[in-house]
Length: 288
Image (cartoon, rainbow, N blue to C red; front, side, top):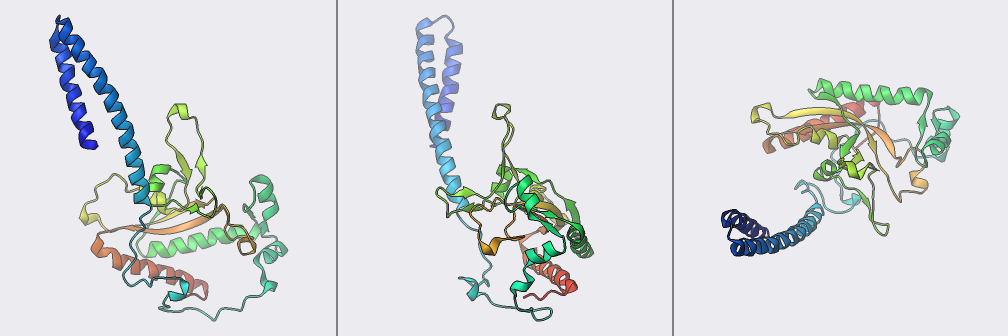
C-alpha cells in the first residue's frame, strides 16, 4: 500500500507538470486537471487506509512483550528461584501492626483529607512520615551517587507518545472495555497541543532524556538516578489488600536507569542489584 501511495504521488507530480506545460491548450489542461482531481481523491483514500493499517500494526507491536532473561524461570511466583536472602528473619504478620492503625495512632497519615481534596487512595503524610520519605529518598540517592549515578529530577508530565515508546501502557483488562491506568491531561484540542500524561514511573522521562539522540560508544554507559512522582490510576485495584498506602495513586520514586551497549547490560544489571542490596541492608530490612 505504501508503494502504491508513492506511485500515485509521483503521478500527481507529473500531472502537475503537465498542467503547467499545457499553457493555452484548454483541452489538454482540462484533461490534466481531471486526472489530478482523481489522483487527489485516490491519494486521500490511500492515506486514510495506510494510517489505519499503521495504527493496527502499532497496536499489535505494542502487544509483543519484552524478552526475558534466559535464566528467568517461566511461570507463577512459585517458579521463582531464591538466589540469596538478607537481613533478620521477618517478623510474623499480625493485625495488631496494621500500618493504617499505627500511622493514625502516631498522627502520620491522613486519608480522609486526601479523599476530600482529591479522592480515594490519595493521602497526606504528616510529621515524621513526611520527614521519613525525604530522608529515605536522600539515603537511597546518596548510595546511588557513590556508585557513579548522576542525579536527575525528572518532569512528572510527559507526552503520551513518549510513554508508549517506552512500552509503559498499563491497563485494567478486567474492565469492559479495558481502562488505561495512566492519567491523561486534557487541553484545548484546537491549539494542537501534544497529548500529555502524568508519568507512571521516573523511567519514562529518564528514557526520554536520551530520545532522538545518537550517543557515541565512548560515553557509554550513561548511569542516572531519577527522582520523580509516580502517578497510577490503578482502576479496579480495590479491596482489603489495597487499603492504606498500598496501590495508591501517587508516590515518590527513586529510579536507577542506564543506557549502555548490549555487552555492558549484564554488568550494569548486576551493579543495580548491588546498589539495591546495599540500600536495604543499611535499613536492616529482611529481603530476598
